[in-house]
Length: 283
Image (tube, rainbow, N blue to C red):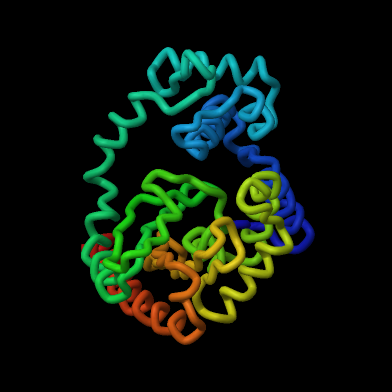
């Protein structure tokens, strides 16, 4: 990635790292600044789901002035990419996003490939299973299968978007990355973490270190009191986390011994999915 050596390489790496922390793009693509800014705003709006986003919050998240954000949103609204609630004045994703998603679905059939494994995990454990995909510095829930245990941990809805590292699935996606990338992503999301159970950078980094030691992500400190979740990343043929599967249950069901049993069930299905996804990528 970096063809330079010595001090010159360190300067390039530092420059890119600083750009990522600031939520920007490398200098080479600065001509696409408006598109990049629009993408940041769309991801921010998506992260709020049906609640919608205020202009002031979007400006703060994107590190842009309110007039700039308002101008971009006005363009996006003209093409139905974004809409504004007439009562609350909050911004939400528009109808074109849904239409584009339908068109893209056949090319990104991750849910279809993973569905049998998700259902087997739910049947074996009786608990709720989530399929999580990475989107930039966020993790998005793209599927949820409920087990037959009567008390369910429905901690995520399909479409919920959270910073990478939040929840077992997001943590599982983050943990396999190189250390410098983890630090950049966590630092870039620092101000957003406190919205999730007052999570902070030191706590998240500690949980990531524990995930590396355990071999799976364990969320017993974030967001949902009385619930514990485990997560494991699905790696692509090049060794990068492609998606993650997590299991959520009430705390009383997730004893230390059962955590190991659930992790073993997850690991078996994840290995199978990695093989299937590798075959799909290289038929």
